[in-house]
Image 1: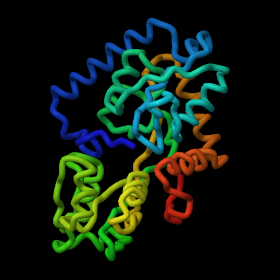
Image 2 (image 1 turned 45 degrees about the vertical axis):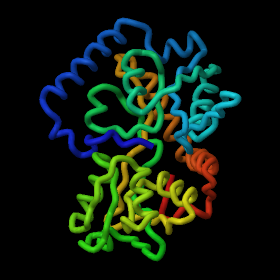
Image 3 (image 1 turned 135 degrees about the horizontal axis):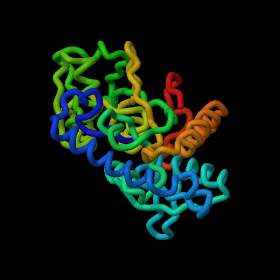
Length: 285
C-alpha cells in the first residue's frame, strides 16, 4: 500500500516549478509513447506482460529470496491478467516511486497498489479502483476507539508518519489530538508499543498486519464518522490507444463484482498471518 507523501489532498499547494517539471516529464513520455506501439498491441504481439513488483510489500508482493518466486495479492492479479492474453510475466523489482517512472519510460506495462494522487495523475493514468483503503487506528492495549471524535482530544497522543495520508487524515479529523509526526510507519508502531503514543493512524491492510506482527499492541479499529477511504488502483502509461486501460477497468469491475478481489486480498493477508476473522466486519475489499 502506498500514499505518495505530501500529495494526498495537497496538490493545490505544490510549487509551480514542481508542477511544471512533472507536466513536462509527462508530456515527453506521452510524445514518445504516441509514436510507437501501444501497450495493448505490444502485449498481444510479444505475449509478455511486464510488471513492476515490490519486494517485501505483503499482502501485495512477497519474494522468496531463495527461489526468486513471487507470491501475494497483486501477483495473483497479474497472473490472471496475463492469462487472458495467453502471456507470460516479466517481473521488475521496483518501488512505489520508481514504478511511476518505469511506466512513463515504457520499461513496464503495469504497476499495482497505487493511490491516484493528483500529482501522480500528471504523469500516469489509473484503472478504476481495485478496492478502497479504509483508515483506522492501531492502539495501545485497553484503548479501542471506533470514531474519530474519540481521538480528537488533547490528552490523546497520536503518532503519524510525516507527510503521509495518515498524517493528513489525523489532522483533518482529530485536529485537537496531540499529534506527533515521526519519520516512518515503524517509528509510529514503536511509539505505541513503548507507550509514547496512544495510537497510530494506518490503513486497514497496514494496521491488521502491524497488530498481527506485534503482540504487545492492542487492537486495530476502523475509524468512522466519517469513514475515510482512498482508492487503490493499477497504474498505466498515458497513451492515445485506450484499449489497455479499458481492458483493466473491465477486468477490475468483473473481479470485484465476483468477489475475486476479496479472495486475493484475504490470501495475501495470510502471508502476514492475518486470517478472515481478524478483518473487521465493516471492512470491504
